[in-house]
Length: 612
Ligand code: N2P
Image (cartoon, rainbow, N blue to C red; front, side, top):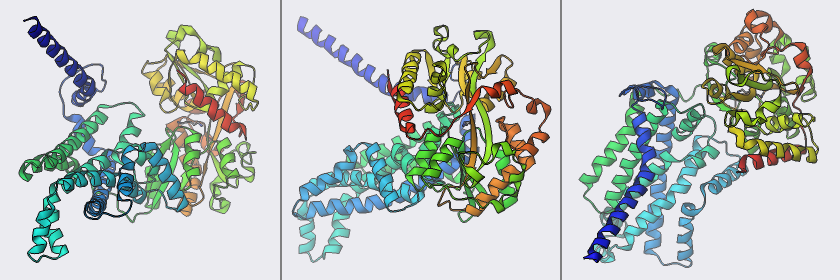
């Protein structure tokens, strides 16, 4: 009796445990799906049921374009990997050759090798082959990893395959090809289809590898979702994630049913539904951008140019501008150093211009194509990072400082505030090696271009001590995090903070009394840019006084363009955060190339970020 009761207890316990495991696995997904139907933009409150986010999705051109790219990549890579994988599986099944076991094991390798390893080795391979990153490199990468799955699935089916059927066909006079098409393939069809569906789902879903091998114009849906998440999770993202989840689950279900040998009719329903979910928006969305159209590929800081300005350039030149965004010079350097990024125009800070120049990664400019350079204030020309402006033209400048919520913090004038335990959990720091170490160096009485390892080591200690107080490191939408009230103090760059001040009078910006850095960001053309002429036209366009003024007025970073400044409304021209008074300018120092110490900065910053 007691034993029976104990048995029941164990059963109940196990049941609860299983429930816990499933909750752990699926609760986040359920929450995400539910919130995609929430009328409210914020995830904090439920304001009612709506399909609005799904409709908005259909109108989002970027998402639709990314979906199309994903479908093209998935379709092509599935066809290729299914053909190759099936052929390989048949070869292994049929022929016993030397080292077959080893060769077969090699096929399973991409399944177990960490994605990040595959990704970086592909990048190296492509660079060695001088293949430009784009749609082709993404498709090749997807074939490389999905072929393994096809081999494994088809091979498993063949293991239980009755060879006598093939032999019977041959005995009855069928040749090898006839046997293949009339007997072998039809019998393996479910496994081949299952492999194909798996390959398709993997391709649609891949982020890590794709993010390494994608170039301009090959942004897939997962890449698009990630770049949207970086500026806050919106219900639109929940909606697109829910669709993606549903579609891939249906495809996997179909693959599973096929593998189990269920009748084709049964498997067709989930497969068809999954494909329809993906293809529906594809067909409903507007037409894809014409392929042959001339495009300018722009790689620029986020919050650095408004879509309406780009639209003007597009209209004037009858071209399309493709924009990719980054939030650190290091990200830009990594892309250009990888060698085949395909960008026409990039926007490095002065010290990054120096690094790129040293590595000969920038195209010398044809200054005769840039008459509007005459509008730029000579104070910003011919600087040490690029003597004679052979490689770059100044685009924006600005200061680094602290923005804070007055009502919460009281007046602030020192970097010490970001180390003040009273503000624990309410502090945001830039996610940037030079800027964070720079602030710590200033507190130590050093400069932002320090190269001495001992001083840098102390700065790292300071940042480690600060880390428990920091809510988040963010170089992208630090202004939004402050506006939302999630933090009370934020290190960040002037332009976005000047905008935030306009939106909320409780926000103030200060360049701390210990001093700070300022930056001068330039436009340049990478070597190997596919459209150098158009790139020059773009550089000249942004230096046109009206355009430069528009760019400054919309983004609120400081324009180095003298003629443009004269066109600006007084509220911007005299804004102390945008064009700081002389006493502030006296205590800021331009971030310079620190040569050999660059690697040290990167290492120390990585140490701070990975410390617990
Ligand atoms: C804009 C970042 C400013 C660039 N999001 C600082 N170099």
